Image: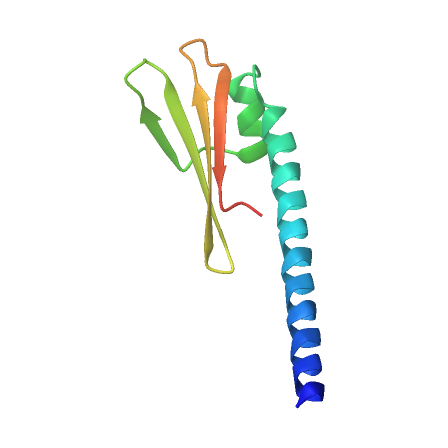
Length: 100
């Protein structure tokens, strides 16, 4: 009986370690994404289009700004990147969802 408990606890320990490893990899990938997107702040729309191409969708906000939306699908996971563009065609903000 004690031997089965020991094996059970060892398996649980390794399962938690595997989850921690996956979490660390996801955190690193998100950090790289943030670093990449932050380089576009205060850059022109032209520089953004050189990197990402034409946006899939352009939305107008109530502050006269525009949102350029770039959509990408990888392994059925939909990645969405949004860049907020001011009236002077300068990137003033961004957000990213599910982009690994």
